[in-house]
Amino acid sequence: MEILKFITAGSVDDGKSTLIGRLLYDSDAILADQLEALHRSNRKNDDGSIDLAILTDGLKAEREQGITIDVAYKYFQTDKRKFIIADAPGHIQYTRNMVTGASNSNLAIILIDARKGVVEQTIRHSFLVSLLGLPQVVVCINKMDMVGYSEDTFNQIVTDYQVLAGKVNLANVTFIPVSALKGDNIVHSSDNMDWYGGKSLLDHLETVDITVDDTAAHARMPVQWVVRPQTEELHDYRGYAGRVVSGSFKVNDKVTVLPSGFSSTVTKIELLDKEFNEATAGMSVTVHLQDNIDISRGDILVSSNGKPEVSQLIEADLCWMDTRALDTSHTYFIQHNSKLTRCRIQEVLHKFNINTLEKVYDEEFKLNDIGRIIIKTADPLAFDLYQDNKANGGAIIIDSRTNVTVGALMFRAAVE
Image 1 (tube, rainbow, N blue to C red):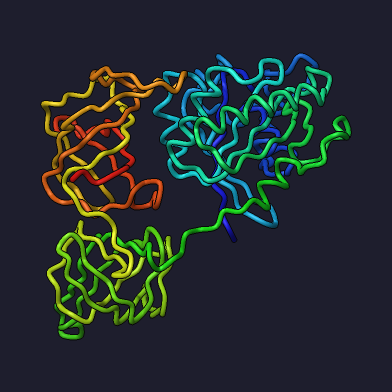
Image 2 (tube, helix red, strand yellow):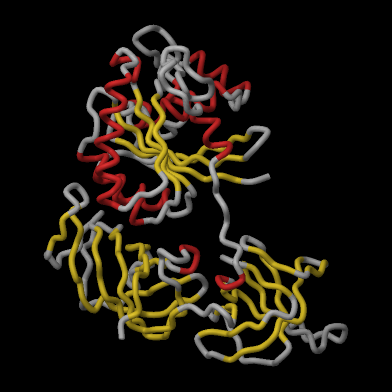
């Protein structure tokens, strides 16, 4: 069954956790013991109904304050799809949490309070969604019950957001008027907004296009392990184990090993004790090649007809995730798929003011800052541009002193 991963984002108190709680509650995706605990809870809405936000507020501090602090993941399914929901915090100090949650998502739900319209945090979240290349965006204009289910209010917010979407280059945007508190247009279509002719949120999530890039040109498999049993039964066995991160490989395909550049032909694809003619994105397989090539962990098998960039000097967008500021004189580690090597941030080109969308020319990179940098790596990396192939277009920065992940990278260009 197809899996849709989506993240919810919005300003503080826009109703993200309530929307997810309503989605789970009205789609009968809550276990019996959770439902019982929900009814016993002393957190109620003003009208005495259950506060459904409890379902995603996992931390004690979240339950006490009624806010989201960390990314909460929830899982449910319908007859049509499985869903993984990431409930991201809206506060600016948790920008890194949203980046983490959005990096593996197919779709973003951006909530807007119908009483407030497009605000500063809406701009910030939309910019991050664009930066991370999410292909589908749903703008849920929430709390429609508090503006009398006004069509004019909805239309004005749609107009305002379309201007913003143009500025941050968001293409596939769907607008849905909802009330998470009352359940309007979440799972069931609302009788209170007969002027709206579109789908409910769940209907849209069940049918939205999340086509996976399975083109052979983007075939990428980072090598995690070279399989050489060297036993009597498997004396000549040599396979290369890894997970296909994008595209697909078939038996008899011409492949190139990077960064060395040697080429060969796929002779066999194995998964456990079975052989397959094709390996697609998401499959962890062992690939056999016609030629004995010096291949080790960190190398990557790619289609010979669609090779990525290979460079040691890369322009990238960086999201800084550490309380200690970036130090351009320090040597860090960069982890790109299974490749680990040393690196330095050679130059900070600019930072982004993600509230105004302006460039800021200030070299100090602090927690939650996002900007464009040039990075120099000790060994060549075989990478795609993030906008072309997210699966092979991102990496993380690790502090060599603490082994803490301090940054997330999105590759934008190879520097000559």
